[in-house]
Amino acid sequence: MTDAVYFPIAACGGVSDADAASYDRRWLVVDDKGEWLSRTHGDALAGIEVGLRFGYLVVRAPGMLRLDIPLDVIEDDDSVRRKATVAGVEVDVVDEGDLAATWLSTYLGRPCRLAKLDPEGQQVPWPDAR
Image (cartoon, rainbow, N blue to C red; front, side):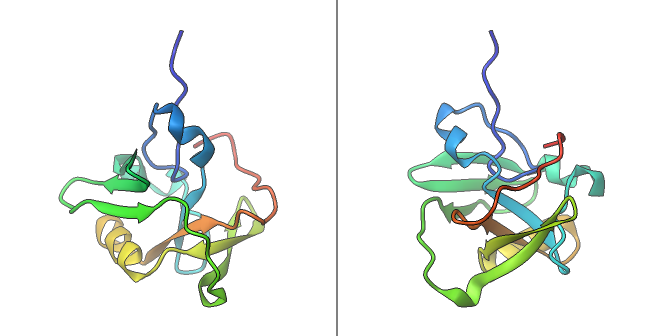
């Protein structure tokens, strides 16, 4: 019997912690046009390690300081709401801010941002690849 693996940030490293089930693919990395960066954009995303600890999404990567993102923030600031595209479908997301964007852009070597799926938004048509 194998443990299930969950991917809180779609296309990044997985975690086998059962507590991660409710956060599976809740976040995604998008480029400066709002397109989801899948692993077809390179292996660097797979090098991003993700974990859950004390109410935070903990993000690590080689050569980078740890990044902690609160898990269950209820976003009431409409200025951070955006649209992103996953597999050709536009979805509602919440931008996680400049610190996360700078962290990811530095690690990946290109402008990008971390976005959280709007919990009240539509289903995301995730391709089979995580």
